[in-house]
Image 1 (spheres, rainbow, N blue to C red):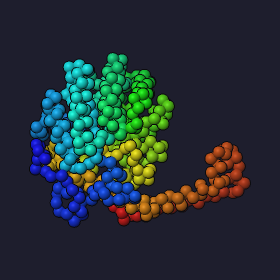
Image 2 (image 1 turned 120 degrees about the vertical axis):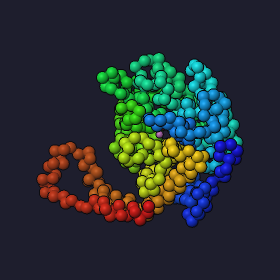
Image 3 (image 1 turned 30 degrees about the vertical axis):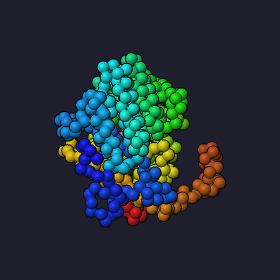
Image 4 (image 1 turned 120 degrees about the horizontal axis):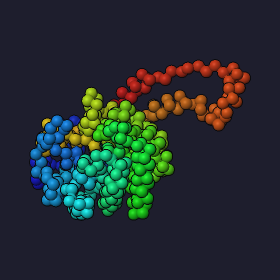
Length: 433
Ligand code: XUL
Ligand code: CO
């Protein structure tokens, strides 16, 4: 390794008893879990924005890190790409994810920005070919630049809608060229700051038409990956239209896109929406909409999207339980949408944050697999709903209200409550985590 990470050797699996900080204790890519290699289950990805582009700023202060590739030039972007692929090699993970704005400098015109993006993607293509690192997903940053302050697809200015369309086309083109497994849309500015200046009906129509064009374009260019929407209730907007899984599902149904688009679900966004991660995952799975996950955690006190690396194994286990129960990832994977804290200045901090999080995911996955293989929860669930397996019970779902009511009196029904066994189930889960 040369450059920024030069003192750090590639991280290898050393087993749970190792006291080497620079080793995986639980992540063994080749370990077979439920018939599949761990690496192929987790499909881990490094997020370019947090790991390479983030400079340590928060709402009260600017850059704290001193990384040699910072700057708004193509030379800086190429140096950043070198550092990125060094980091990927150290971590040994199969995937990365990026927004256009993470990887290229903004040009003086749309055409120049697009040329910059294309040129950096040439650099990526060569490095991907050489190293075998793959793209989990690409996306457009339509929230940082001031032009997006009133939204992208939902902007009151049609020229902004046009600029957004051109931006997404360019990002889909490079994602396709780099053989990305998915294309993600997250609408941080697709929402409002105040209802007083907002026409909700119009904005929903614009968003629906925009997404329809994205899906049409995917088919036109023969992109085989999934189109994913990433729900988030607020931040940066006061209210965002892609609020949570249920809201996005309703939106997709309204525009007839529910079979074309799946979801990228993020832990921190679930928490901001007042849900648990596993709730959002279980709901998406029940709707056959589970695409990919953004793995991070929020600080439970701050109420912000703090995008911290995951470090809670029981929570992670419950999340992977839902993923495994749904059959595991197909095009999706686990993207670390997480950044180190602004006081974590050193190259070692950046590398070891990933190492710790990767081990947490590995432990979570193994615990989830053990729970599923034991089958305790599924047995209990089957028992709890067993009454519905009887044909006459199922037939009732198609029976009229008055006919059901007549039967209740004729049969003198007097159903008795049964225990939900919550504490016993919680204790059962704790045997595995
Ligand atoms: C923002 C967020 C984004 C998306 C991609 O909260 O999660 O980074 O993952 O735009
Ligand atoms: Co995210």
